[in-house]
Image 1: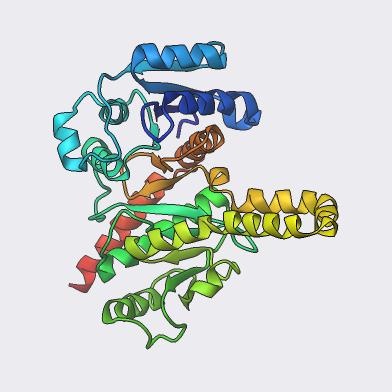
Image 2: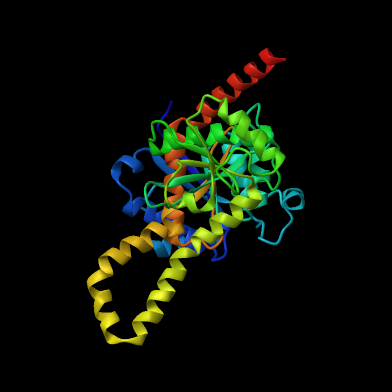
Length: 347
């Protein structure tokens, strides 16, 4: 498989306008290791004049960054399905079209998540055997990062879909993060197989018999301890959980600040502990993980936070490069074909 990566980047998505997106693209080339930068190009998709102006301000003309004009913008308030019909020349639709035509082989957007999923499915299509793609978010733990799937693409999930999420998450963990035998767990209200609603019990039974390194149920208090490499849940639960985890750094930082204000000895102690605290903030900073891939598509689509900083955009582009080069799309396609053959044999 070719190692070259062409990333279409939605310059009009997100909460902060094209300036932050362009800065992130430039930072990617300025700050990334050479092994990541090799054979990478970025196509900034958005309003030509606005993007070109910001690219000039950021000093990005010397990097392999191009601009593709798009006259419309899908906002966070737009209904995904309606936006695709009413705004065919939006940055998101143009970006998806670039990948469909083979001009790009990965795309990144901090825009409307629903519209990103809809445009990705329209342009790329689903891998056969996957009824709905899943968002896979990387979350920090006391040990190695954990993959949480799904975190918002699917509110309600049938057992068969969650079963397939486990395989996709396991392959993603292995191929992108290098975990040889990812530990897969099912998020539940208790560790016992008998706990939870009937659908979750059914998923447990299916995963117990699956060719995965399944470790059973996991409760919320086990996730940040790093007890699993992959945690499977429906998108509603996953979205609530991941946003709660992202708030931890702000809570800890705010509490520490208030305590330091109370007495000078606390401030002195902070000076000695500052390097350790900086590592802690970085570990829990969502910007360090860039974005979440949509697993189950015939292509690479990374959904970044709407409030993404330039650092987060830089890391989201890096995540797109890693995902493209990992061969995860092809591996998931092969695994789903294998599972469908097994289903036919049972019938």
